[in-house]
Amino acid sequence: MADNIAIEELESRPVVEVATETRLWRVPKALAQGFATARSHIESEGAEVEGMPFARYLDIDWQSFRGKGAFAQFLDVLTAKQKMRIGMFTSGPVPSGGSAIGTQIAAGRYVTTFHRGAYHKVGDTYRRVFDWAVDHDVKLADSTIENYVDDPSDMPMAEVRTRIWIAVA
Image (tube, rainbow, N blue to C red; front, side, top):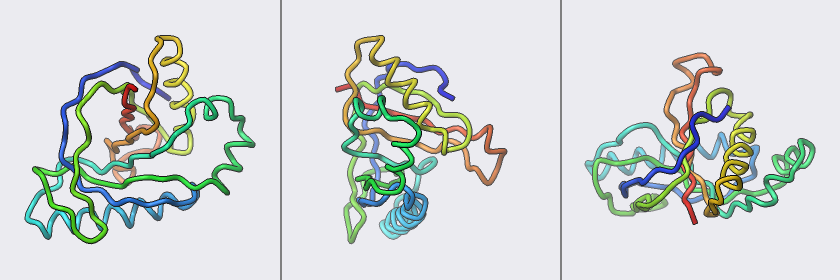
């Protein structure tokens, strides 16, 4: 479920990301590999990880997302490839190396909310955010960041929170 949808000004933050393109059903494996690569690179450069990891999903077509029913979404999980960046916030700028990209999350205006609960229901939160954006005449950029607030191994899945940031276009 979506909690408190709003627009916030966010400051630029240094990150290390790993770029990938994967089928949606393989995202959990890609996340685990990307987080390990990013953390290893950050530590090898003498920097520190700040906070929980994130996933940045790219090239999102919000119009087609809204109109999809459950069966179409199921087919996407089986067949669609998703461009994404998997990363971690850092204590300061970190140079790129290997498959790790030292970059920044851009400062700017973002639509933000929290998804609460099991990850397989995050689509419901995105539908609420999209509807909110339409109702408030806000144009969403074609990417979203999911920042994991809670570790699902530490609490019941129904209470796990994921912060969602979508840049305002």
